[in-house]
Image (cartoon, rainbow, N blue to C red; front, side, top):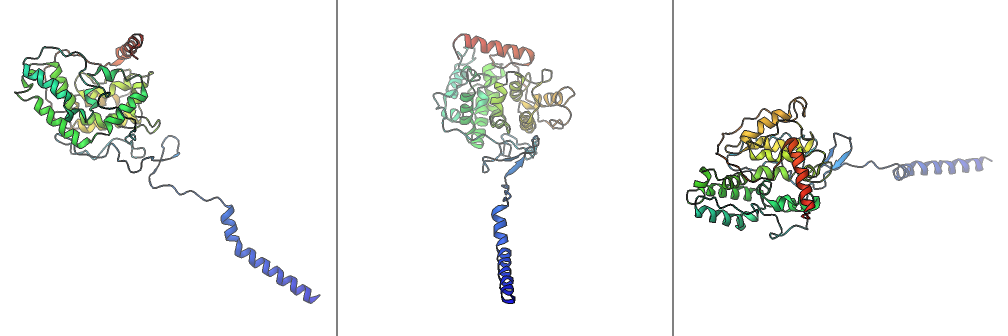
Length: 351
């Protein structure tokens, strides 16, 4: 009995030792493995859900890039929340060609140029590949019928922005600033500019606002993953979201009264871009940013602290303006005009 008892004790000891040695591996196979968060993860301030940046190697559109001309000294600072940065949307492989991309000033040009030289230069500039390869949205927002007709087709509009946002920002910004300076030369359209030719004034402004509008229209919504601009255009319940982008064009385009745009991260980031460019001498935002920012920051709009109102604006360059053609709407009349305009186009079979 003692031998059997010793054997049983020995066998029990062996099994116990085996279980103790095997326990770590058994536990590892049964217990759930805790996931390791990627270094580029961010926490959504709204839901607390962990969001992983789908394009970790993509530089944020709000990251500093030397603007032209006269870069603001605070370009490295933005009002975009650091916990939810906006990124440019990944470009599509299905992009429009130069022949299908909307063209600026595609309505019939008037013959009220003061010189034949300016008329010829104006037309030549619009078809110059140096300009067209940059696909500037700033030339389309106010003065392109072909661009206007894309606003009711989100997929088409997104494809257009894919092309525009794929353009080399630094190179194109320098190029368009140079073209703006050349446009005002006495041998080109300088006389028409000082005489108040609205076409020349618009083109000059469009060239100057290339970079701030590039940066604003290329922002991606962290919620919908669409371009913020596309979401603004297609938001039929609040057409004022679309109006915000026209603030870049300066005086006459301020958003200072109700109805107000949606106070979301896209509006905050867009105004953050505009705040930095309001500090650049000669930029139209010098005059339009602060009135808009103060109105949005007021009671009844987005509230105190939503946008930066402590901005030192640049110097103003005033131009006498006459009436001109524009696809821009504003306020309650803007909502009605937008709906009526789209309705007429649909009824005419243009959409």
